[in-house]
Structures are given as C-alpha cells and as structure tokens.
Image (cartoon, rainbow over all chains, first blue to last red; front, side, top):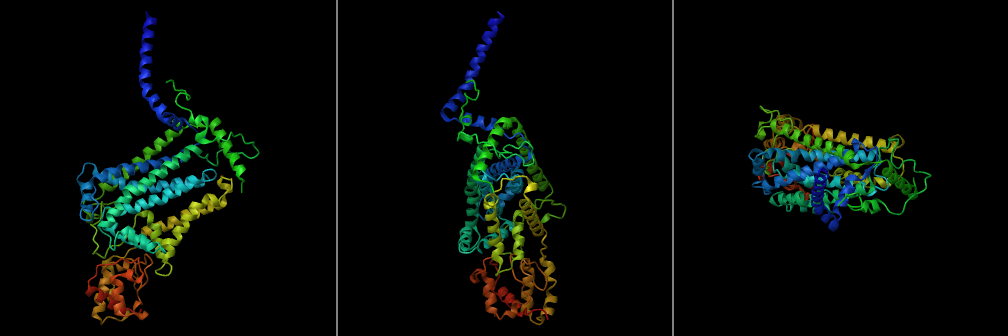
Length: 273
Length: 275
C-alpha cells in the first residue's frame, strides 16, 4: 500500500519534472542558450578571485542603472529649446518619484565614470592587460572614452545655464583640433549657433548612438572576459598560471569557448532532461 | 620581454590551474558581484536623496534656507543672451578644464585641448604593447607603479584645481573699475569706463585677466595691455562680435549690442598697460 503510494507520487513527480524540463529542452535544442548560460554561471574562476574583481560588474550595474533610468526619463523629456527646461522641472517636481529617477541618472553618471576608472586601475595594477587580454584592455579604454562622451552629450540636455555654457565652450574646444576640428564643431552644433538642432543632435547621440555602441562594446568585453578568464591577484601564492616557465605545454589546440566542456549542452552537463 | 611561446605556455597553465583549483563562478564570485552591485545602487540612491532633500525647488534658493550639499536641482534656464555665466563642465572634465588654464590662447592652447588628451589616449590604448614583460607583481614593476602614481597625482591635482578654481564674481569685479581707470590712465574717457563696466559685469573675467583680476581659463589672454598692440577700435569691435571670424573658436559669440561693442572696444583701446 505504502509502496504503491510512493510510486504514484514519484510518477507525478516525474510528470512534473518533464513538464518543467520540456520548455528548457526545447530552447536548448533550438538555440544552445541553456548550455551557454549554464557554462557562464558554473564556469570555474581562479580560486583567489576577490573583491577587487567585482569592480567590472559594479561598473556594468551602474551602466544598467543609467540605461533603465534613461529610458524612463526619455518618456517625459522633450528635446527642444522651448520645452526642455520645463520638462526637466516637470520630471523633478511633479512626476511621482521623478526626482529619484532623474537624480539617479544624474549621479549614476558620476558613479559610472568613477567605477570605470577604479576598474581600469585594478586591471592595470593586476597586470591583467597582458597576453592574451590586450584586446580587452583596448575595448575598455574605448568604453572609457565613449563613456565620457556620453557624459558630455548628456550634460546639455537639461538646457539650463550650466548645461548651455559648458557645451558652448566644449564645442568650441573641439573646434580647435587641427583639420577636423571646425567640421566636428559644426557637426555637433548642427549650425552656427547652439539651439534646437544641437539639442536634438545631442539627444540622438546620447540616447541611441553612444549607448548602442557602449552596449555592443560591453558585450564584446564580457565575451572576452568569459573566454579568457580573470587574472589572479599578482600577490597570490596560488595564482593561476604562475611558475609556468619550464613546463611542457599541454594543449590540444583548443581554448576557451571552443573547448568541448564549454560547448557541452544541457544534458552533457548533468541535466536530467 | 617574454616570447610568444612563453606567454602561450603560461596561459595554458592558467587554464589548467583554473580547471583544477578554481572555484565555480556561482555561488562564490557571483555572491561578491551581487553584494557590490547592491552597494553601487544604494550609493546612487543615497547620493540622489541627499541632493534632492537638501536643495530647494528654486535654483536661486541655494544658500537661503537650503544647504544644497550637492548643488541645486537645476540652474536658471539656458539664456544665450546672458554673458555673465561662468562655463563649468561636469567634474570629470575638470582636469581638462584646468589644463586649459596652463596653456594660453592662441599659441599653445591646442596642446591642452587636443595634444595632451590625444597623447594620453594613445598611450592608454598602446599600454599592452609597451609593457610586454610577464611580471605582474607590483614590487617588480617599478615603472608601472611610478607611472600609475604620477597619473593619479596629476589627474587628482588637475581635478582639484579645476574644482576649486576661483571664479571672480561680477559684482566684485565691477568695484575694481575705478582702480583700473586710474592705473591705466583712462579715467577721463567715459566710453572706456562704460566698456570697463560691461567687461567687469559680463563675465569676461571668467576667462580673461585684467590687472590681476579674473581667472585665466580656456587659454584666454591677459588684456591689461591689449590697446598697446597697434590694433584699432574697428578690429576690437568686429573681433568681439564674432571671434570665430578671426580663427578663435574657443571664445563664444556674446549677444552684445553695437553700442556695447563700441564701449568695449574703447575700453580695450584705452588699456595701454598699467602706468
């Protein structure tokens, strides 16, 4: 009697598991995404990974805060000289928690920039830009430069005195560059004077062009981090990859994500299916 | 200098070590990442609350009843016609902003605006190709450590200097006009004195210096002896009307009237240097 009940229960359990696993298997069979995510979550990192290694993901978090609050602000902000300032006042003073969203965007920008510098300092001091991670360092420097450009284009949008005059000078400074300078300044202004053309130009760059580029570069940056792994702290006695000299290379010519373990699917990684 | 084979061997060893002695990203590293991300979001929200709750709704109310620990919610609406506003970038451009005080228009300003930032960016991009040693321990990388300290110090000092740069207030500067007229010897020239007052009250001293007053910003020159350079009134009038026509793309076009332009030109022409 008791045995029969247990069998019945486990049969129901099996049914339930099958129902849960079916969509996961379906997705895995058609995309390989489940295996990829499993690889990402359960991949090995050096045992001496520490708090310093969180600066990169902290920077990503700050950027995601910017993306989210920016999208909400875009629902209320009006990018033209007649109504930009009023729309900022409206967001700050009238809309429920509008002050919080705008404030988080305003201050999050600074946090993002600071974290980029901290992250860069960590990578520099750990010597983590060396082979084979040179390319990821370069992408990081690009992200820093583009991130600051994002700050510059966003600074004009509140259309207050600070914004206006800082941008007047900023654009004029661009104009001092040899050859390209005057063209760049004219392009940024969208005319002889800073006005409606400038504000919509800066808005388009700040909302679409630069964030799109940042997202793409972050994607590439993360891909390389996962493919190449993170560097152990240089002071660690158990640093992964240390005392390499004299050792025979034991490679099968495959690396990173092309290793069989990396490509193994849901089932091969222990999924029951 | 390590050979490519050394590098490859080391990286192969790295991958083996991680595979054998590493820990899974979840839950170990992910826990640290999650805590840190929560700290970041909390800091952003915390700073926002301090900013919002210590500032008044009115941009001019800062200082009267509101402590404005982190500045007003916004400044006055943009007004291209006002000339007494001191341009200030966001704090992370202060180092650049201050660099432009060091290099003067027009001879070397390009070094500050383009030269040094471009060189710094190229060095940053090329870093992995300059430093090709395998060593990662800081005690064995003296050049890298000294370089890092120098970069942090110079960026820090420039940012601090940019943040605390004293901008003369228009009201204080106007008070200096009679002294200027006396020292420069244009006390009897009413048009020049009117021009000096416009110069003092329109924020010109945010970038230019005159007999020691004002701050030299964006590479703007000292104007104390501008009238002794053999230029005529017409030159000054058209220069101030549109500096970009004279190849000066840093100084903005201000909305002065023809009468104001004439007075400013008279003032500059009368500025033959202190007697």
